[in-house]
Image (cartoon, rainbow, N blue to C red; front, side, top):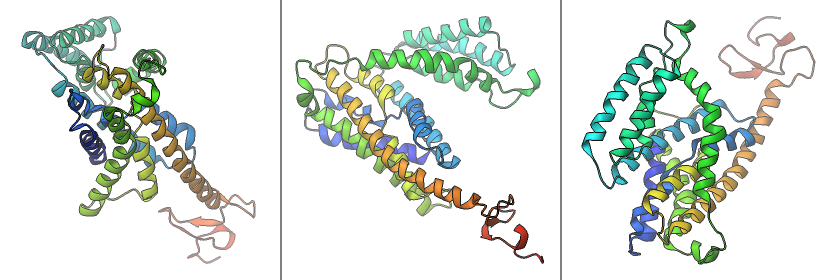
Amino acid sequence: MAAAVGGVAVPALIYTGFTLHTGQGALRGWAIPTATDIAFALAVLAVIGRHLPTALRTFLLTLAVVDDLLAIVIIAVFYTAHLWVLPLLGSLVPLAVFGVLAQRRVRSWWALMPLATATWVLVHASGVHATVAGVLLAFTVPVAPGHQAGGRRLAEHFEHRFRPVSAGLAVPVFALVSAGVDIGGPDGLGESLSDPVAIGIVAGLVIGKTIGITAATWLVARFTHASLDEGLGWADVIALGMLGGLGFTVSLLIGALAFGTGDPREDHVKIAVLTGSLIAVLLAGVVLRLRDRVYRRIHQAETLDTEHDGVPDVYQDPQGRPGPRGPHGSDPGERP
């Protein structure tokens, strides 16, 4: 969570530094390089790192979720131009009913979908970005197992049902629509990337994310009782910081809110987000691939069985601590 905060603050500061004296409303896009795309970041990690430790994936998942929540708060607070109180208050009614049904483990789509839709419409009508409605609805769904349906978690049930629609339809359609940009447009690629706004976005995603996530993690480990998981190294944290620069869909969303249709910087923002995300993925991919090789060698050494007797050459005690193998694969402290 601290890493997520650092990964939001430092890119915003870097963007502000590049655009502070630009004028023409350039500072409106300060939040564009603060976002991390959960789906794509986890997909990259899954493809590249087959031998990476579980703690690494847990770190990235928590980081990305908290990062997205911070992005939603930023959208609600800083990118709501007009606020209508009555629709916003009205959205609390279907939201509350949805929450009551969810707490009672109601799974019928015909009961929940109209309430969710009504909440979305009313939040949208209030002037607050409707993404907030999705977050509020999700918060009402219980994660703990219930007594009905064999104790299955309702959140897990919904996630399983909606994943195909979300990952297979919603995210790709949004990405294609939002990322549509004419590379050979009136300004050209070179001139677009020379815009201080574009430079700030690329620097924020590539440099700001890496510094912010790594520095925040180090500060917490240095000045509190928290520490990295035993299976992780600081090279892993740096790699995750690089991967956090994959903003893509969320950054494009904030860019659309900051520089609306018709703004001359609209295409500059899209090109910068795509460029910064691509650079971040390539850099993170190199480091993660190297780390994956290290963990693969460790795994091979720990499971090596030269005697083919089903006992690894490196003995591990019940606490998982390695040591030399005793006679016949026994505990070295035992008599043969």
